[in-house]
Amino acid sequence: MTRIKVCGVTLADDAAAVAAAGVDFIGLNFWPKSKRYLAPERAPMITAVARAAGTAKLVGVFVDAYVDDVLAITARVDLDVIQLHGDETPEACKRIAAAVYRPVWKALPVASTRDVERLDVWPTDAILLDGPRAGSGTPFDHGLARLARERHPALRIVLAGGLTPETVGGAIAHVQPWAVDVASGVEAAPGVKDRGKLAAFVAAVRSA
Image (cartoon, rainbow, N blue to C red; front, side, top):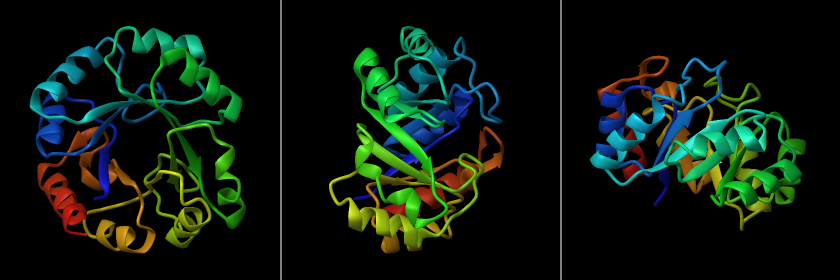
C-alpha cells in the first residue's frame, strides 16, 4: 500500500484532521522562507495534537540547515523523520542522520534523466522526487520518477510535486512509489488544509 504524507501543516485543527484521516506522515516545515513555515515554538503543540488524533509519524522539513539548527529543533519538537529539502550534499545528510538518530529523507528536484541517475549516492532512508522548483507544487514528468524506481528498485521513492485528488491515482499506477507527498493539492490556502480535498486525496490513494 502506498503511504501518504501531507506536508505543510501549520494549524492545530488541521493537524488533528490530517492525523485522523489516517495518513502515514505529517510534514512540518521549519524553513522560514516557506509559505507554510511553522515556528519552532508552536511546533510542540502541533505535534501533540497530531499524536493524540492518529498514528502518523512527524516529518520535520529543513532547507540547508546546519546540524546544530536541526538538533536545536529536534530537542524541543518530537519528530520521527528529518527531510532535507535544500542543496545538502550526501555528506551533510550523513552528518545530520548521525547527529539526530532519526531517519533522513532527501528531496531532489527532477527535470531530466540526469537527475535520477545517481540516486544511490544518497545515504538516506528515502528519496523524495519533486518538480524542478521543489516545494512549489509544480508537477514534473512522472516518467522520470518511474525511471528512478526502475533503476533503483531498493530505494524508497516518495513522489511529490503538484499531486491532487484527481491525479494521484494515475501517478501511483504509473510510478508505484513507496509514498506520495501532498501540500497544495489538499489546501484552501497555503498552510490551511481543505477537509474535502484531504478526504478525497486519501480515498484516491487507498483505492489506487
